[in-house]
Length: 362
Length: 223
Image (cartoon, rainbow over all chains, first blue to last red; front, top):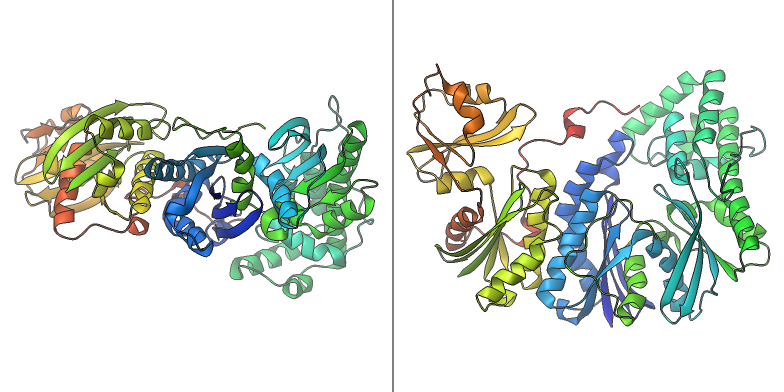
């Protein structure tokens, strides 16, 4: 069974075809990076406009790359939330139109569940199964969620939210700190590339102490601490020089950035990254200990962070840790098609009243 | 040829089914929550009523704006998907042009409320050729753009503008009020485009926002 997935929840127009929930046949992602870069973040109206222009060629390409014709597709899956409502609507309306025209089931998918199933898909593709129940950490520019994920029968997944960010998502904190330091957008990959040149233990930054649910996260205090440090260190001139570079070059090289970034700033970057990864790891380990899990899943755009991967791999104790490949860590539609397949098997279809829900919970 | 036309660009939406230039059926819709969650059931119901399948539709049309940015995209995305699914073509139709099609007069000044103290407006001749290009501008500025043209105003609701014509040279200008169910007019404009070979491939279709996004209007260098 060939399942078409469509994902437009933020600033990537994506489509993919997955065969029977276990074989990725195509994965097309049209990035809007160059549109939003000048604004230092995703502009919702512009994202929606770009999706409208990209949706037809992206879906067509995904079907062609899979070596299929439209008539071969057995269902259409689409992200219905959470995300930017205007962006979600483009994917949703396109998926509904295809479903109506081809008379195939429509399957609405939660974007966060998709991130978890990126891992399930790739393990299946490698002939392995993720051991459930699992602790799933979904961490990106829009989300920082900890779930207790169970699979009670083949294709029957259940999720219990254990903790979530109360303010900024982890990836958002990366973006904001990078912007503050004049490093451009998106911040995560840039900080990841610079952090190895700094000493991660040199700047003491606060870890949030949560009242109430101790598995919740908070990153806004950390961001403020970096801001205070920057002000105290009088870094205006170097920040301005990096801003000029970010304005003139869409993707500055590490070498270009190192020339403009003194050692104390590199130390700050390394310390910031260390603190974020420490926070994510600490909470995940605690949640895993409190619940009887058999494995850990770390997914979402921040799962691309090399230090995060390294620390989870080394320090996750007895639990096997599964990451998606880099291309399936960031937003994509393969994960949407993968998450939809169990629903297809169980007949959990959506009707045409399926609405875009910007704050859909899992 | 059979044409299915959609207008979801305001809270008063509509669907129309046309056979060449004859409008076979029009369905008026109203929703303050947009149309993404209800337009597809309505399309199915319209086709069912006429014993048709989607494969029987030869081409699609949609109001392409100006109007609600999100509403514009819902209609255009729907027809892009429907057309792409069966290898059909699409005609995106400007709302202002659709008004002119449904209106009358030698020179038709079409007007839509753009909110924020502005209107979307344009002038077409009786052959639907543009005389004053589509603009988003304050109403008084639009009247200046009309120059010496003797126009007939065409709108779905002219009430907000009528009083302001008092004392201007447009005080006695004729006004034609058009049904808010604009899909029939959209289908009418599209029928001509199809017959003249001007229909587009689905990927070529874009919105006619007229107004730029706030981000572009207010852009300053990111800091």
